[in-house]
Length: 300
Image (cartoon, rainbow, N blue to C red; front, top):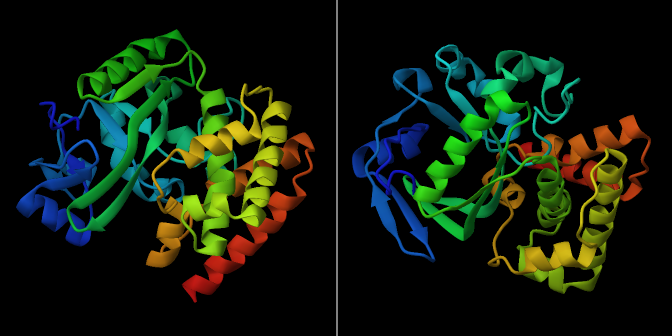
């Protein structure tokens, strides 16, 4: 959508996906209209000179793999916009979460003043090489983990997205939005992987509905203990999920494709914070263990 609006955009991709984009452009199927854009594409960010901002859209557990590609761009002062589910690596100013950023490597590499964080409320799926299906309104919430020195970057990124017909808002504190989305990810994602169901049938089934509600309640307890009060009830958050198109969660997509699950940054991170704050999350631990064994079984 940024490229469609006339902005100079390049993409980094891999394998058949990269080759398809290079040959035929990047095609998007959407309820708001299908379109194709022709954009420069490379297998490595270092092949793309003059980058002002990097939207890092790999899964959180893949961040370390692409981190070396960011070094030169960071030295030139570029803005980094991490777009991952779960608790972001920059969330805590004084420490790293091992489930998200083992050893704090990402935090040491990316200066906080060059980060614009985001919470995304839209869904995408790769239907085939060079072809993306997008569902849900393209809504983006932006915020910065550091102080006033990052405000210019925040306003620039937010304005850029709004000029491309996306609903972008700059927030003074992104952390409540992180937890608001996390209530859904920490519950819907693992339960969908365990049941093999998309969102609609999960929420319509009384048993899975109760399980999802319980997981959300435990995550809400952790958020409160971390100093974040969310002005939303569990049923209101479930209603938000129910309004989405009946889609596969990203975790179910990864499971079916035989890919590593984004379990640690989403569920493991909440449990890690719960342990640090001495919050009881018994149901979440059980779901985490079951999903982890499912992942290992799938990998085998």
